[in-house]
Length: 263
Ligand SMILES: [Zn+2]
Image 1: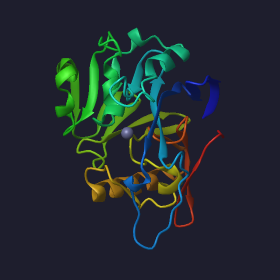
Image 2: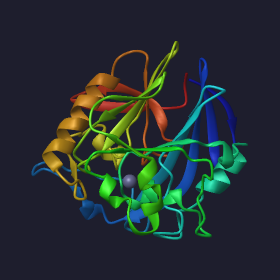
Image 3: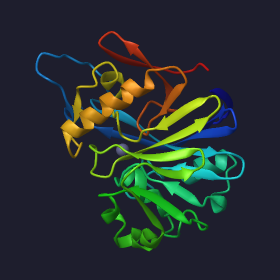
């Protein structure tokens, strides 16, 4: 993937025929006790004031005609360190009024609540479809209930566009879903919250995350996706990978490593 543009809020890449834009929503600080480390394993993730700092990223994939936004950030629903998505889209030169398809990886606030702008209006006034995994659609309630009639429930592999497929990857939540975009140059897997702490979980994918709904299922999904990605022609984009959250997975010892900053 070739980087073609950047600002503090976005980084655009070219994947032959597709433009992939990483969009910064902000960051979230959480206690390191959220990492569930097996006995006998010592890990030392970098901390900021004693806390893990997770980047919060969303991604737009565009073929020049259709564009799909994967995840929406937190808007004003959570910590004030998040909620930059609409500014990031503007920085990338993307008209949010032209976004018709949003693909949600799962129904946690930092992924879903950006459907509603800070002023309470729809973030994407032309929105036609919201893809969301079966089991997570119940979170389209209260201020998000207005999107229920546009929900496309993903319970099996489902085409989003001719070049993007939604794939269930249950574990982090009952409806956790990943999105695979394909071009002649390779495949990009936008994998939501498969990994929360890249400095630990690439090398040690067995390390679980306390907020995983089903830690065994989440661990199995993480291992299966890492195995699939660690082959030529595959790229990964992650909601909590260090900004801009895009790279390649390579085998490394008994685990994996994320390679960034190259084609
Ligand atoms: Zn998340």
